[in-house]
Length: 512
Image (tube, rainbow, N blue to C red; front, top):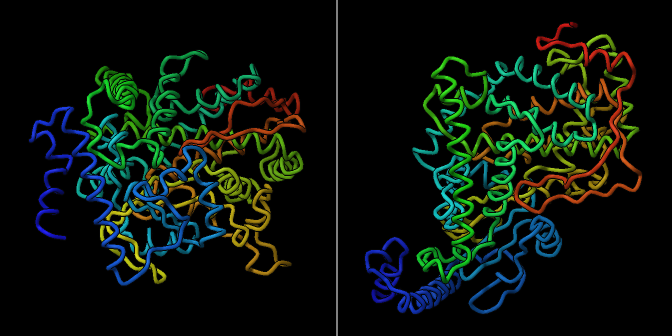
C-alpha cells in the first residue's frame, strides 16, 4: 500500500475525525473514501496472503455478506452454513472479516489453546461507545483493566468463595417455593423475584416492581445491541459522528444509554447506602462494593442467565413428565420427604445433575458467544484468520451437533450418565464447556449460576409436579441471551405433606 493510501487511512481513522472538525457536507465523502480504501486493502491482503480464507457463502461487491447476516437467531443460520462449508466459515461485512467457529475442536484450539491471540473484543461502536458498555467486563478490551476486573470478580465468585453464598441461596429458594404454593400461575415472576436478593440484596415486593422492570428492559436492550451486524456503525465506527437528526440509531442509543445508567447507578447506590447505614443484606453487589468494584453489567448477566435457565427448566419438566418422575424417585430415595434437598445432597443425585447438564445443552442461555477478536494474523487448518477479524463461537451449533450429542433435539439426561452396558464413547461431553464462554473470557459467575440452578431444580422437583399442555410449543427470544417466551404450566404440590413442608418452613429453614 503506498504512502498516499496510508495518509488517507490516518485521516479517516474515527479518533481523528473530531480533530478535523468535520461538518455534515464532508462526512459522506469521507465515509465513501473509507469504504473504498478498506475494501481495496482487504482484497489486496487476501490475494497476497499465502493461506486462503476459510470457505463461506458468496457475497456481493463492497457489502460482502452483510445482506446474508440475519438479525435474529443467527446461530441457526451459522449451523446451516456449517453443513455446507465446514467447521470454520468466513464471511465479510463491508470489508470486515468475520470467522464463525462451528465445532468444539475449533473453539478449543483457537479460543482456549491460543487464547492470547483471541481474548480481545471487537470494537462495539454502538453498544460500547454510544450506549456506554465499553468498560464493562464482557466488552472491555483484553488488557490490564480486564485482568483487574476479573481479579475483583473472582474474589467474590471464585470456586473457593462461591460456597459462602449457599446459605443465602437456600433461604431465597425456600421463599421461592412458598411463592409458588401461593400463586403458581405467576411462576415466571417468582423466578425473577427469587434471584434479585442474591444478586443485589433487593427484595422484589410486587409484580410490577420498578427495579425488576428496569432489569428486564436492560436485559432486552443489551442483548439486542450486542448482536453482530445489527448496527452499521459497528462496521464503520465513523458513523457514530453523524449528526443525530441523520441517524436513527443514535436516538436509539440514547434511550439505551439512559437505561444503562439507571441500571448502573440505582441498584449500586441503594446497596452502597445500606452498607453505610449498616443494614445491607449479604449479596453479590454488597460483596463487590466492599472491594471497591462496580461491574453492574456483569451482575445483571448472572441474573439474566439464571432466570433464563430456570425458565427453561420449568418448560423441560412440563413437557417431559417421565423424566420428571425419574428425578423425583431419586430425590425420594436419597433425601426422603421429610426435608428439602440441600447442597450436601448434590453428589448423591446424579440424575438431577444430569437434568441440569441437559438443560445447558438443550436450551443454552448464550447460543452465540459474545464475539472475540483475533489480535494478530493466524493460520488454522490451512486457512488464514486475518488480524482484526471478528470471531464468533456458535455454541448452539456445537451443543446440537449430532456427532457430539446424538438426537440433539431430544431432552435426554441419560446421555450424561455412565452406564457399564454402553461404550465409553457414548457418554457425551460436559456441555458447560460451551455454555459459559471460552478461554480468558469465560463467565466469572458460572459457579454461582450453576449453584442456583441446582438448588432450584432439586427443591422444585422435591415439592412440585409440573405439567404443560401436550400441544405446548414455546419460542425462544432471538437475542444473544436467549430465554423462552412467556408460557403457561400447571404447578401443584406433590402431596399435602410437601406443601406443608414449604409453607411451615421459616426463614432459617426450621418448621415454625
